[in-house]
Length: 165
Image (cartoon, rainbow, N blue to C red; front, side, top):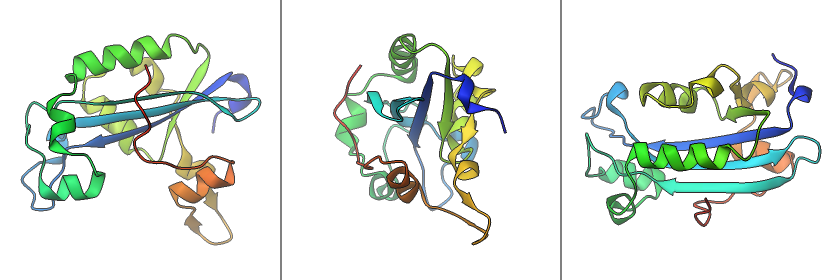
């Protein structure tokens, strides 16, 4: 595991993607429909900024009932959202204000989804840190769930923050 003390910021990223419980959307055909991120100061562990945008899917533009129930994202939110190239440009612009950061997410799903999406963030992927590794409890032989890990660090998990770019 890399030494996180060398970084000024921790980018904590959470993605949502199109999905279906009936197998009609293959894993490699899933599209990002929401990008949520917080930037955390590595010294104080306080959130210094937030980013959130919905993303308009192209391959599967109509969300399944399963996807809406799982993500709480409404069809109208993705219908009026920017496309992935536009949303990734917005994220890249936001990230430019935070040099020397490390990218982390809950498990490897988000890193793999970015790779599938031909992301312009390939430079971040090599420094990705899975929070499931950081929050693995060896005595219990299980992983602390996402919400509890955030609360452990003093963060209050919340759904769909106001868009900030």
